Image (tube, rainbow, N blue to C red; front, side, top):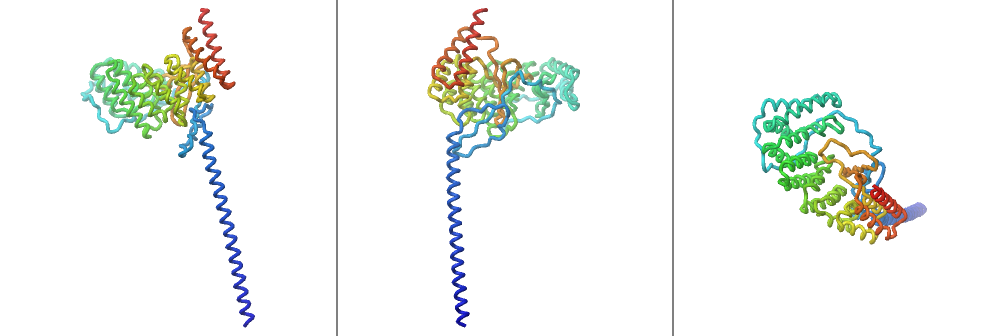
Amino acid sequence: MNDNLQESRAGRQAGAREERGLGSTWHALLLCLALLSFGVGNHWSKSRQDLAENSPPDSAAVATTDQAGGTKTAAPGIVPLEEEIEVRDGADLEDVEPVAPRKVETVSRPGLQPAMQTQPSEPSPVARQLVTSLTQLDFNRGPLTVEQAAVWKESLQQLIQQGGPAVPAIQEFLQLNRDWDFGAANPLGYPSLRTAFLDALGQIGGPESQGLLLQTLQTTAVPSEIARVARALEQGAPGQFHEEIRTAVRETLAQAAAGQMQGWDMGPLFQALQQYGNASAVPDLEKCVTKWNYYSALALANLPGGAGVDTLVRLAQESSGSGARGAAIEALAQVALQYPTAGAALIDLARSGQLSEKNWVAATAALEGNRYSIHDSGLENTGVQIGSGVKTYSLARSNQHFYSTPAWGGMSTEQLQQRIAIIDQLLALSPSATVAQALQNARTSLTSAGQQANAN
């Protein structure tokens, strides 16, 4: 019995020692896990800090392939990654092949009632028949032929010749909020069916036509339609509808910023603002700079009377991480001769070390005479003029498209000397070898252009 008791006591002691050993093992394992978690967390925290410190605060990075789709919204505390630009030489652009027209739905600005609504009257039978023939052309057999296009254009001219009585027939179609996208390089001369009718209204003229154009401006959210209607109203009554145009642009941009205009290019709206805007458009453009940095910067640079230059200077000095700084610097370089404030700010930025090498090179190209313009005007069925020195730029994520052209048509001797003077001031700041070479190349090009002008 004593033997059994001793065996039992020995078994309990062995079990206790085994439990203590197992507990010690678990404690050691938990301690290792805690240390490992601390090390990983510390490394992750340091990586976030390094990324925030080392991420470039410039505008979009230039690349020959489009990789912008992989850019995601950054977590708080991390500078957003740059949006890359696809760059193509104009001489390398292939001719756009005609495509079969496709039916699309238009977009409107919700909850808005036109301040001036044209009450539709009964269309004349001839006008209604002409509109029907224009809308029921057989678009289902591929791209339009030259013969089909000739018949269609003749019908459109006949509709325009109807004058005022054609307006109710056009209004009937516009109120359907349907459209045919004709695609690029089509033989009809218009990007879509609705734009053809809007252009016809501009050619018809008169109170009824103007009223329908204004009604369309107050309801549509299609950027190219707003630009086309704005031009037609301006041609019929210069200066009379600028406030209505700016309101249409402002409301549509707000709709796009809220994510309700996916896939639509906002370029025509920024062109309308720079053409019909004034100082009152500056806050709207500044608000858009984080989403459409190049569109906003180019529009600010081209506002009448230099109304946006001071804002560009501030964006170039203060902005970082959104691409606004780089876009603002390039826009300032483009108007450096036109507005002395822009040129002085560019030199101050270089002197203070706020220009990255990429900013320097882009500004040098603008100082040499390259001009940047928003690609899609929404007004014509034409692409970028192809020629030596033309480049196109596309930002896929933000859906921005613009292009640069060299100083075609030449510059005056005074303009050449002014550009060379700014370049000399930048060279005196001892930039890097890459930047110095770019500046020197631009200087040589401008000097050669001046010598040729003097020889002629």
